[in-house]
Length: 522
Image (cartoon, rainbow, N blue to C red):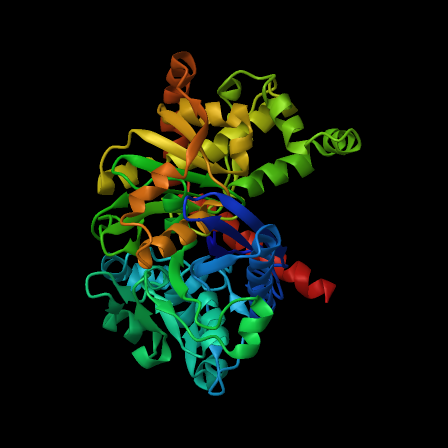
């Protein structure tokens, strides 16, 4: 019997991953290729698009080969794509890149994002496009390029994201799915087309962008040489897919009303699904497309697992080196240290704004701090406060999300942090909701694969994902800890608003000092 598979590919910030599943959702193969994040100047965060294209072809070829090695009679029904949002590449008239892929983490457009928000009616653009005004967005990046790199801007024939670049290399067409488009700040959610007001602000025409198409559309007709190298028939459908955030919701089976997906990787996000485009009156949440009847409302944070890495390096370097020699996960050592301290870290709070912050503040100038530090606090309190700070910070998005999408009842939690029983319980206690850890393998890859099955008619509904995703852990709130955290949450939430002027003063000071230090070292 022929083994029928779908390959789901996720083009991420630090790696491209792929899985192959059968029509029942069982994972048959997986592969990942890492690549560096390039920082050629302060605040820059770029990737080499050709390097990413090669990673994409490698993971597809590997997954197909792994499946055929297990069963020679294997049919690849489709390849489907997830990708990180907000990337921007300038392309010349010969369809060659003039820049690297400028990622969501690039902060060079920060002054222009502030002007858009404060002076150019940015809230109205947000309400039409669903993308908060922030340096991450291609809209802000285009305004920055237009004003600060006019020669490059003038030479550019079109502006695309990384997934459009990959599809053009595969099929010679410039197309963008509605989901990636809805995260640009340039796409009108009601009309499902480029927004005229945003285009005027960016200084570009619609024909300088890719053609928007539904997430369920597909392309066929690979060049013969490329099809051969991938190990696929040339007519294999390549489904456009969606962005990584909305597909992660699908991949963890958080697509019903009241179900919230929380992810903590390097960064983090909270998302829930609604049935039509919805935006927040204050511009605190995003709204991105999944399908015509599925839209994802939520908010991302810059400061997730990156905080855990910082804590490990700055507070527990000796312990983690010992753990490595003993074959123990260094992050397990951190949680063991944090467990010495009771919930609430004896009144110590940590605001984890080491990389500025997106939702719900959308302010790149926020800075991290310990608050409430006393003589009775030691290293273990600071470690616990940092872990709690990441969860408090995610919690700060919940009121905005619920104001748009309604009350939540359960959290589906994924990401590296979900391996830690302590952190899972901490989330249940802070949110005062059940936390469920789905049994999914690379949720964005799985979401892409399920979307392909739906797009090509192999399943009737996206709800089929419920039969593919089990639960590995479930945590209910501890009443005593939840009550304690309820006392601390108002303090945590109020401080960023009270300290706005001080954050801005410090950020400007740090930028001046950092620029002088960079110039003196060159």
